[in-house]
Image (tube, rainbow, N blue to C red; front, side):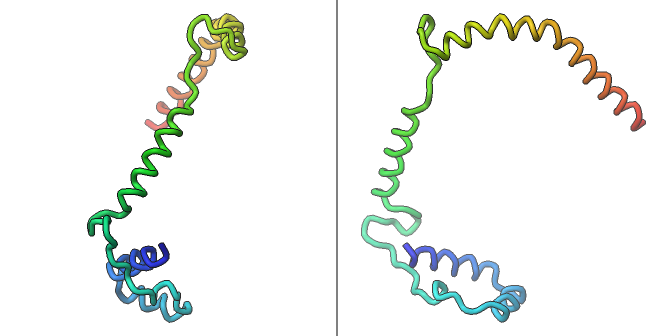
Length: 120
């Protein structure tokens, strides 16, 4: 793994090589990772692939198991605490929005209009 990282660092350094790179090298001590030999592509790893097939498959399986843990909305009629709270809060939220939303929108629109008219 360290050999692969060293190889990637070397490639990036070669792409960015120039007078700026030389100035940085003079100020800082040598990194032992830069001296490592580049890793040769092993069996089962195509030259253009960044990870092996086994690593890609393991990642795919881990992500699919993680996606199975995503919380889904409760089905209608589900008697969970979350569903009960949602059902109880909905009318209260509707009442609050009916009472306060028009004033909030009016104030925000008025501020935006005055801000735009002050620019011109």
